[in-house]
Each structure stands twice: as C-alpha cells, then as structure tokens.
Length: 361
Image 1 (tube, one colour):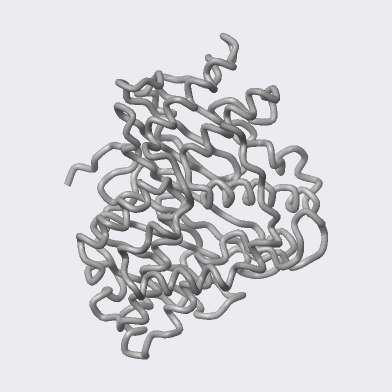
Image 2: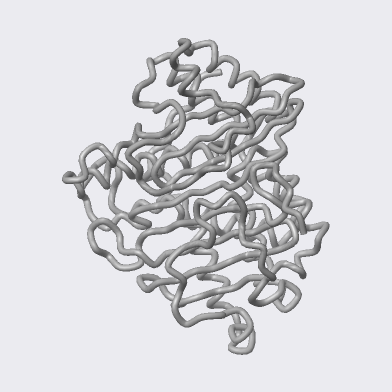
C-alpha cells in the first residue's frame, strides 16, 4: 500500500459548492444512495487496519515500541485532546524515518476514507500557515507534530486501539477480531476556518478545509421559519467550546433543538447532507453503517440545535443529536490573524459510549 498524495487545497475551494450541492441532492433522493459519495475503501477496514498496524510495528526499534505501544487498558487510551501541547503520548511523525512515516500514514489511511484522510492532512497543512503568522510560538506550530499510538497488540483475534493526534486533530479507533468497532471521538478543526490572506502559496487565500460542515449548517438554520427557529435556536450567544472536550465520554444530556420530524423535505435533506459530511470521514463500511443506523432510528428523531449568530463572522454553534449520533460544531474564536469567528472545532461522538466503552444508563 502506498501513501496517497495530498490533493491541492485549491481544488477543494473550486469544488466546494459542487460537493455541497451533491450532498444535499443525494439526501433528497434517498439515504440509500449515500454510500456512493463515500471514497473507495477496503472491504474490511478492521482487517486492513490490523495489517497496516503490524507493518508499522515491524519498522520500530525496541525503544520506539516502548514509546508507541501501550497496554489496551492504559488510561492513556481514553486521554485525548486537540489543543497544542509540548508533548503527547505516542511516536511523533516528525521523528520517524522515511519508511516509518510511510507505514504510519498507511495505517492512518486504512482508518479513514480518502475524504477523511485528505481532510486530516489538510488540517495538518494549516499548521504551516499558523507558523507563518505566529513564529514566536517556536515548534508548537508544525505540520509534522502529530503522534501515532497503539494500545494492545494488533491481531486478527485481538482487541486493540489506535490513536492519531496533534493540534486540531484527534482520531481514536478500536478494532476487535478484525472488526472496526469504534471510531470516536473523531475531532477535526481549522484555524483559520477560511484563509483570508495570501501569506503562503501552499495554503492559498480562500482555503476552507471544513467548508461543508459550516455552509450546510448555515443553509439549514437560515431556511427555517421563525416558528422553527424558536425551536432550534437555544441561545443568542454561542457556547465558547464543544462540550466535554478531552473527556473520555460525551455529555449524557437530553437532545435540544428542533426535531427532524418538524423539518420540511428540503430542510431534512440538508440535515442528512450535514450528517453525511461527518460520516464520510470514516471508511465506507463504517460510514454507511452509521447512516443506516440513523435511518433505522428515524431521521424524525434527530435533533438540530443552534446557538449564536446565523451569519458568518460572528460566533455560532450547532449540535446534532440522535440515539446513535452526536455532532458538535463551534466557531467563536478569532483566527491567528485576528479575524473574528474564523476558527472551527467540530467532533463526532457516540452517545452510547466512545472508545468502545458502553455508557451505563
């Protein structure tokens, strides 16, 4: 397996509106068509991850194994965060040999769809932009300052975990008997949300790594009637951050906002497209299973809640919650150049338990 090249960010700018239109159109037709927009993938992502993990392990020295591999039950497995840190668990990509870097990225590729992997690499590339703005922060802003960690021994008859983490990315997986059983928390962020200067040629002005996650939500909230908005909008001011950031489990709170059953056909299609945007980060079988489960639970039971302004440039937040889905998005912080509300945090969590740990009710 070879590492896929990173697509030029400019391509995503040009194709952004077409992608959003496609997502909404697919949702309007039928959720059963959703798999067609997921990137191609292996038939069994868990088996592919096990093979890729073992290839990666074979490149490690004894000392590197001690840095990279922990017991499955280690408290470090459920310790996650996306803030910049001086140190993190695991083996830093920057310190790997060329062959180790290829093996590590092959493991990450096997854990995500092509879309999810590209998005992660583009988030990493934004660190170069931050460094160009904040050179006084030393080595904290670095597109190679990301860490790979394994928990347990990867095997076809074993239960093991994988963490990929650094500033603005935290992805956490559990594989059991070659089946990928947990993919959350799955966190992406973008600073700046929209690049507003020509500072770097590699990150051109207009770049929006998480465009669909924001645009579709604006489409939805601004399509609501005043009566619908009174149900959906729970606060005039957006929360400063997603809830339970860095905590092992998501908040166990009742859904708020407007139910899918109170949306018209067009609005429900946009909501579906928004959820698909997040699910499409996962391997095709996993993303498809997530959407199929939501369909089984009933889109009418999915809640959409909004906080803050309903136009860009002012703090805004949304939450999507159903029996088997919890998505949170916040954009309230200024970017590194001081542009207001231009710094996105968003996450997919499992209301029934992240890290393959079921929450007791």
